[in-house]
Image (cartoon, rainbow, N blue to C red; front, side, top):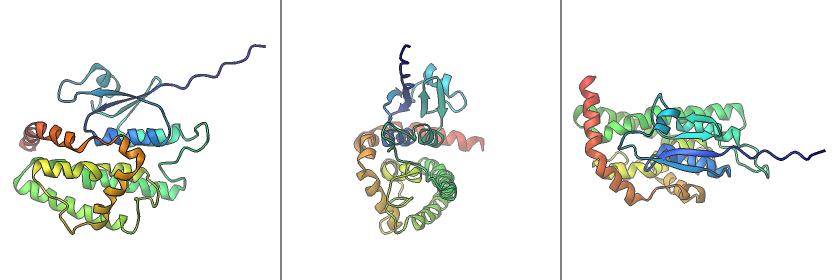
Length: 242
């Protein structure tokens, strides 16, 4: 009787772009789970490639995870997919990014959604608009940051002592916010404000796995500086049609 050959694991590739905090989330998730992957880097300043358009025709944005012949889009759904698809590694020791308890999982998803819609969604226009609209969005964002700060108080990470799903959801606030504030000349987190949120980025960036996929800060500053007029122009067009 012939011996069956073990099936090779499906290859994992990540369509990404320099400076994307959303792709960073997925890189951290894959590394935490011990999943080998290949990076396919897009230049989003130019026309998106046929590969990206074919696998994410709805949003036409990174990241996109290619797992064999499957494509998974949008960073937080990808992180959840990675958490479930690669739960059992060869040693059975891959950490869970979302809690096992149903209530705790629901709570983590709630805070990830809060971060996405109440903190990050208004953050981009705060940086690249001005006048009354900018002031209104800045007030709303700072109020949400206050809520998030209270949620983090007394904890190393959002889920406790270990890096998890909500920390990945909030990664923009850890490494990218200061860069955007510097480039745009806008301060959302001033000295003395949000003590827990000001401490947490140091914990996040000191994690060995996180450090592997954090882009260089100076390179981020140069990248956003190079593109800031394009961002301002894009936000002005959005405001004009509203």
